[in-house]
Amino acid sequence: MPIKLGVRELVEFTLRTGDLGSTSNSQNTALLGARIHRRLQKQRGENYQKEYYLDKHLTLNGEDYLLHGRADGVTLTEAAASIEEIKTSETVFDQLSDNTLTLYWGQVKLYAYLLMEKETDLDDVTLTLTYFQTNTETMTQTEQVITRQAAKDFFDQVIAEYVTWLKFRSDLRERRDPTIQQLTFPFDHYRPGQRELAVAVYKTILTSKRLFAEAPTGTGKTISTLFPTIKAIGERVIQRIFYLTAKQSTRTVAEEAITLMASQGLKLKSITLTAKDKIQFPEEADLQP
Image 1 (spheres, rainbow, N blue to C red):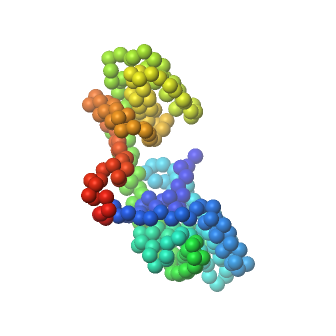
Image 2: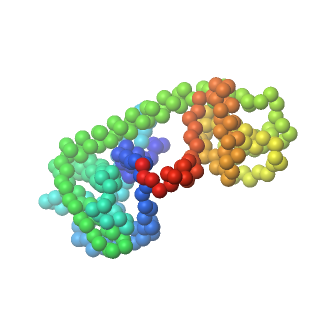
Image 3: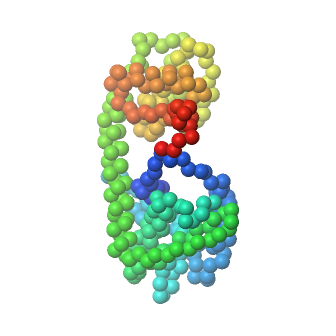
C-alpha cells in the first residue's frame, strides 16, 4: 500500500516560507469556500471538467508514494488544455503575500505536470488562477502558460526538496529508534498503580482506542503516559506525541520527564509550544518583529 501524498500537502511543505510578523486570520470557512467553488464551476463551459482527479506513483527515499489531487477544473479540447485553480479568502488580491501566491501557483503547476504525464500529446497548458474575495465578491483571474519541460523542471525541484526532508527524517529515526528500544523505565521501581497505568496506555495505543484515566496526585501519571508512548514510537506504531497540559506546572513535569530519559540515552526531538503573550515582555506587546 503506497503512502498517499496530496498535491497541496506537498506544495505547502516544500514551498512555504514565513516570518515572525503577525497576520490576521480570515473568517472564510471551508464550507463557504466549497459553495463558491461550486458556483463558479457551474458557470464554466461544456468542456470544463470539475474536480479532475490526477495522480502518479513515485518511489521516494526507498518507499512507494501516491501523489494525488483534484484540480478544480480542467478543460481539454483538440486545440488546447487549461487548468483552473480557485482560491477564496477575505484578503484583497493585491495584498496577498508573495509566498501565498507561490503556493497557489505551485499547486496548479503540479497539476499541469500530472496532466501532461497523462495526456502525452500536450506541449503546454494554460494555468488560470481564479481568486474570489469573499467579503466583497470580487473575482480576479490571472493566467500563465507552462510548457511540458517547465512543468517537469518544477516537479523535479519540488520532489528533490521533499526527498531531502524524507532523508533527514529517516536519518533521525535511524538514530532515535535504537535508543528507544534500549530505554528502560527511568526509576528503580514503579509506584502503586503506575505500572498498570503504563500498560493501559500502551495497549490503548496498540488498539487505537481512547483511554480515560483518573489517578491520585503522586502516582506519576506523566512518566506513566510518556514512557509507553515513546516505546510505541520506537516500534513505529505511532510517529509523534502531542502532550497537552492545562497548567504550566504539569508542562514542566513533562519537560523534566523527557530530560530524564534523555540523560539515560534517549535521542528524541521535542519542542514546547508557548503562547506569544507568555513569552513577551509587557513593553514589547505591541511591537512587530
